[in-house]
Length: 117
Picture 1 (cartoon, one colour):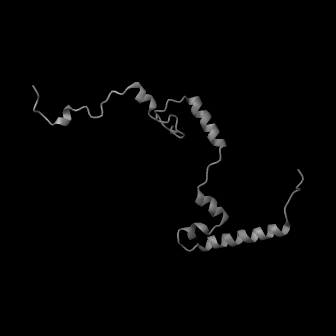
Picture 2: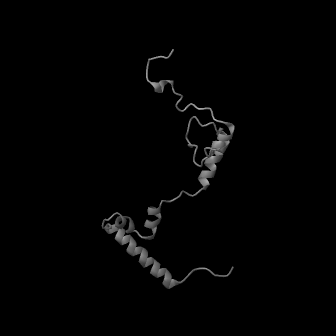
Picture 3: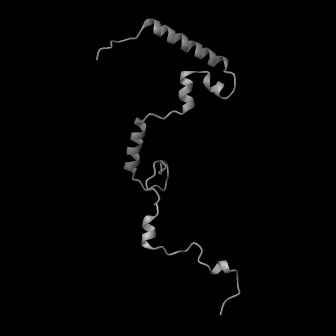
């Protein structure tokens, strides 16, 4: 005796399948231990206080990574404005001029220190 309640989808197994052991081992597993998978301030993280302190000590010694725009602006003060399609500010122009003048003065003075190693 079959039921006439609902649709046929209700009685199908859908995604509930029993896989053979050979099929399970051949599938690519989820990569465990992804970098940056732990949030430093996650309250539910099970790392010990000592491990958290050790990580913070390491982090204090590491230099902070700079983004591309910051590193480029150190080379050319007018670059951020130009890259966004704007005219550089007066201050940025003056900074760039001063930087170029200082480089020329340093080139005239020559390099400091001996080259002996």
